[in-house]
Image (cartoon, rainbow, N blue to C red):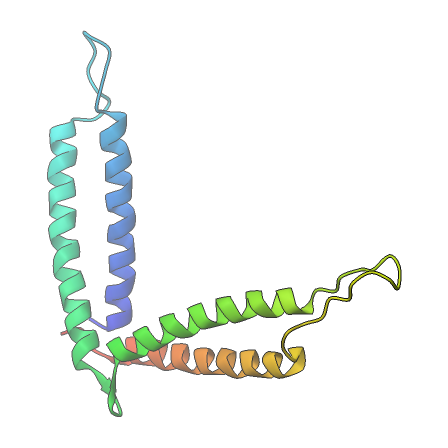
Length: 150
């Protein structure tokens, strides 16, 4: 099984577990004299089975990510880099947006507000990080589709 398929299966299992949790909560209580729509004991068995499958799959995905290299870098390192690039871009784009906003003055006697950085230089830096993020994500996707799950 390719790593990408394992990631898809993991997402499906996570959705199934969330649905089982909802179904368990919906069948937690009933009016006296009535039966629940679904048997909570059966739902718990299904939840246990799904969680065992998920645990095994997560272990195999993490093991594969930590052992598979692209050059000198593992998939785990690429994922960490991607996550930090996303966060850096989020913060920088918010800052850039704030720097770019103009402040209206009603008269020449009001205090002038100006940006603390050169917006054009910051935009070039944001663009460079965005490119780096795209390239990192593409490399991860390529490895996901070419790597066999360990």
